Length: 440
Image (cartoon, rainbow, N blue to C red; front, side, top):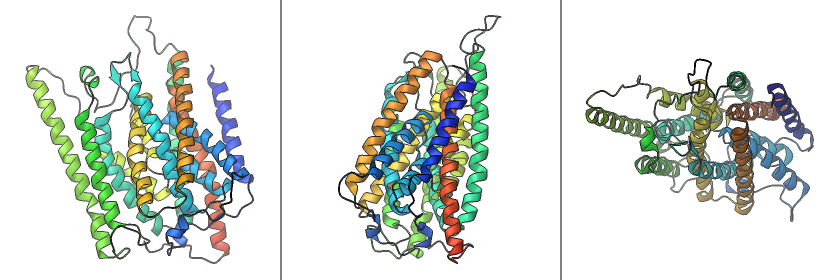
């Protein structure tokens, strides 16, 4: 399987996906930031018809392809689902966002289930790095919350410009990293050199457990992640959203709203400090058992929270979630592609399930339609993961995962930029405010 043949396939897929913007002649709906007085009735599909229409079939088919591609790289796929739902399905942005949360959750459930069963190195090492997820998840959630506020403040043209510049740069670096991996694999990367030395790539994750410990179930790490999930979810329910939807009566964007929102900062600091103290104690205990002969790696624990905060912040601004941005950053840091995909899938599941459940509790309608799309993405993700896994085992090329991440990002640039450009032009011709706005 040659590199140029694989790149041709990716190019054809990009062209095919970008052509979906011309399937439907529906007008682009007004963005959320331009309709502040949105009530619960806007969760319904304004163009709903009885039975299964051609749009529903087209959305299901394209979403299946998007889910299959996204699952290989461990990214959520929200950057593909939202343009498909709005351009092809003719849905408003708010409805598309709610459906996308369920679709991403469905795909993430399939990814996590598969990566939990699959192990690397003949069952010696699990693929999901729960320690890395522990360090990243609180700050990823905090970054997304801050990014959502900036999304409401920034004008649409600035968001689109930042999206193109940043994601295009990440796409270029990701594809270049994939080409490097491909070249190494083509030169017998998994074999031995002429001197008999192994050339297998080491796992560069600084947070991984020892091989003997990784076979055991990480109940402590999973329990801490569940506690993080419930803590942030409780804050989200108490705070509500900027449209006044919440489980308690609170003024939208009032003093109480911002006080509850600010509680995420000490919460993230608390969990991170707890995790680092726990890791330091475990490391000291291991050194004592080995007579102090354990070589300690350079400390890089704080790199992951900072990286997660940046990815979540930008993801919230762009409205695509942090998974699509944290995956290329981890790849650039030298994390093994399979570990990156598995760990990002787990973090995407935590954040997307929180959003989906929040939509349910806030009175979302058309639940069965959202669950149907989620089931479709679940099956498509399993199929995509199975195909990618067989290709990696057959050809010995984990770089396919890197190219999958680059493909999803490239498709997102084409679809979301086309959609955003139409939205900006329509706002400009309508004489709407093109400058900075209030957060509420």
